[in-house]
Length: 175
Image (cartoon, rainbow, N blue to C red; front, side, top):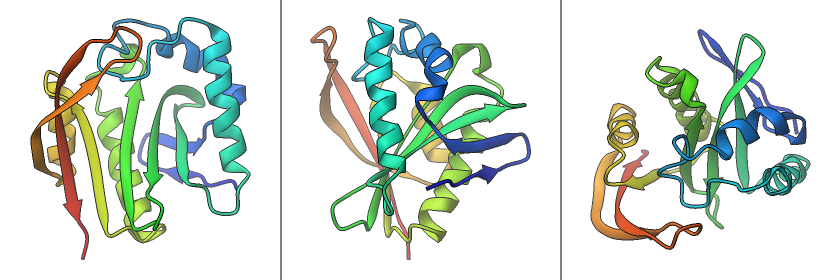
């Protein structure tokens, strides 16, 4: 499956193993992945394993999750995803941007495009996103998207460090 979404400044296209070097740059960076549950990746092989799985998922007629590369002028600067539940009526967002491109509105631009894709193409009835309570930029983006705080008393565990933190869950019901 080959889906391409264009915004004013970005092109969102299927993330793949071909993005290994650019993805590993941010996926292995401690600052960049501070609030990512499964990251940072310690080796390029870890990043490659993830990307091979993503590449295979895109080969399905109806993927269970859509992991897009966020590209700016042809350069991959981050990723954004929408993972579907088993009934395919709920989508969970996730995103990461290379820290060199923070505070420029790229995550917001990509997130609005994926919100539109999830609602209008995937026909989801509910969107969710979650983050560490300390990740102010992430939950502010969720609020810009129209998601509302659903829960602020959950916890998340960071798999690399074992650290736990309070988790915010945001959601939006679509009519």
